[in-house]
Length: 134
Ligand SMILES: [Zn+2]
Image 1 (cartoon, rainbow, N blue to C red):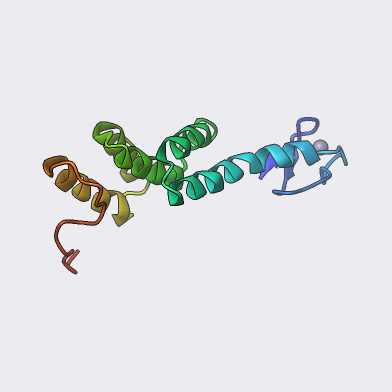
Image 2 (cartoon, rainbow, N blue to C red):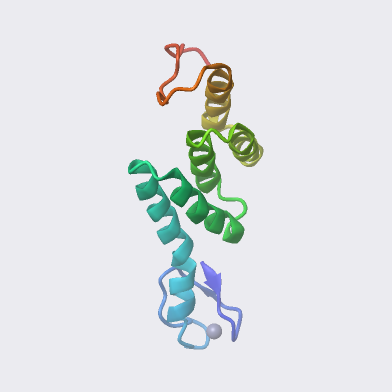
């Protein structure tokens, strides 16, 4: 969803023409989709283990969408993979502010506390099996 620059009418995502004044809003619609494309590229980068690439893409996403919890979550993961503990913690603390009912940032922060204590390892899995309570 974005607004037409001519008449401020709300245009739906992917719209080609403004429903208010019929202006061509195709380019704006594409611009609105860019952060999604960046996010997807970041996901792909994470899957192939390129956390640095993912970080730069996600930094772009959150500069446009500062309250995007999914982007911050993934940015935290990327930072964590690069052993940037403080950066990871900042990301997840933000997500917890945006989504107080989302358990994921709390779990990630708990995992981070374990990782901080552990010696250098490439194993990203939790050191202990997670309990089912909570
Ligand atoms: Zn318009």
